[in-house]
Image (cartoon, rainbow over all chains, first blue to last red; front, side, top):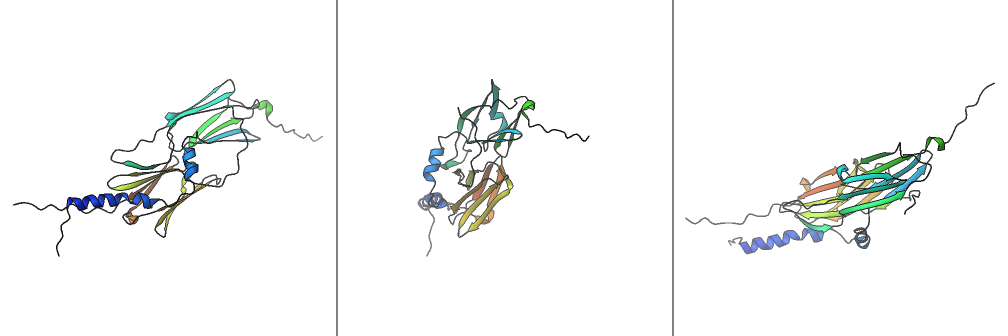
Length: 146
Length: 104
């Protein structure tokens, strides 16, 4: 028996190729959580220790040019944007990652210095470090031997 | 105004992913902030692609699994991590070429 693969058959194959998507994901118990996240701003964490204040933000795929950190009157403003263009020739089957502009402000505690502040972007995480002001740093007394 | 607080204990997280499709491949993009190349593990288990990624400070572990269909060329899968985003290229098995009969 001899069969010809016709255009109709080829269309059927195309439809079949789309199926991987349905098969790609198993049942996702976090579905609701993730769709909530779609409207949320990037997550920030702050941590205080003897050296000062560290603030971190998850910003995967955000480039340095698209990120700005400003300090004014004891208030820090982190703003930027994440663009997630679909490359040419591709179409999106599922989009959970959040794109768009974001701004986050927070007030600095009195005892940290903005002069020696540092900002670093590594592996999609922004780290801001605000060291304690010199006059607020814990002092160690030299013990004099008489 | 949010007053900075001490970081909450972290544990397992489900990474947000995008799935894109072209004629040739499926492209999986996963947000893995704070993860370095050495922290990513991708492996197969019962026709599923399993992603496990640990942040370099050890605080967070991202986990997710994806059921793969038969028409993904598993042996040709490639992955790349850049700025906390993992891109996994899953090539499709080549579709059969439409057969045309030349007319003489």
